Image (cartoon, rainbow, N blue to C red; front, side):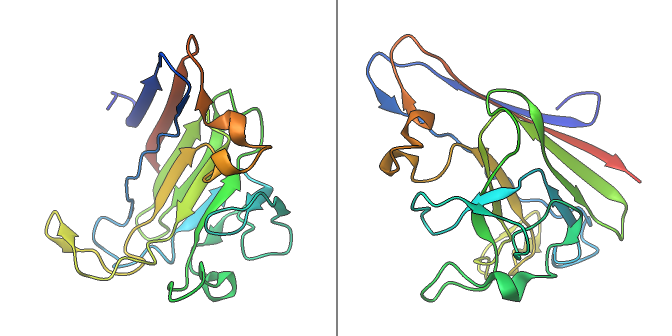
Length: 196
């Protein structure tokens, strides 16, 4: 935590043998501070014009244009939830996919902006990773709780910057997750909090 209302997460790794590395930080956020049981009205913006469908992703890269996965402008999390569907099988309706963050994946850049219209609270997220997994809390089922609050479906969301899931099995993505001796894995996320 910084004096500038930031939560900074830094992860790093070195190795003495070829190793798979793809660390992620999986915090949940609901910016309403208990005023809303869901994040469905939160406005989300993702700096991503493409995503990798499938659970796990199979190597396809798809434009978000004219799809429920287009968050390039602020959109309520719940607006296209039904149209987004589910990950398949008995999975509940909701988002749990990887977006390709626009820009150079080795550089810090804006990944996402989240705003709760009711409270005016805003969180921006910057990171140096190629992707972000947006999880809408669709599997939360009320069976867990924290800080006195039950975790209901869509009660919070996660924005996990990382290399693409399943990258080790997709030849074009494999370099994202293979760490060789002499190289350093560095993953930085900066969550900035403000009000409007």
